[in-house]
Image 1 (cartoon, helix red, strand yellow):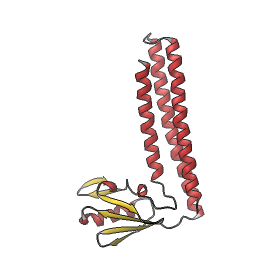
Image 2 (image 1 turned 90 degrees about the horizontal axis):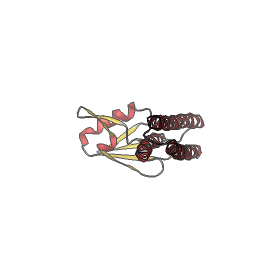
Image 3 (image 1 turned 90 degrees about the vertical axis):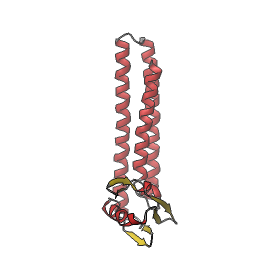
Length: 185
């Protein structure tokens, strides 16, 4: 019974961690990476679609992204979506491709992005801790209802704490890595 509860908690914590990592990948560093724009929402044929679903995105060098839409008629929609995004990038249309030049970051912008990274990581940690709390309450309820023994509940709580600590540590490592990338000139 407790193994199922712990397995479910681990799956949910992994999903929260993955979502946080996707958000961090979308935060711009001084290097061009396709993850920066993969999730930009494009109004394509009346449906809001992530950019990676309607175009191939590749990087060319350290400061250039190339977007090649699978449907050339979507170029203007992609351009509008990139301009609307909070990335501060200006697309250049060159025939059937879009080029995005990634300018170097100013020191002020780097510090702003570090604050955003810290906030997003803290939100991810809070989500993981909330999952721990919910799972702990479920385990306490099971023990109260005599579904599991007190020893089994204690063992499960220890495992849950170790699981939580590992996800919190990985979030902290992701934060440190992203900050290091932002501080590189």
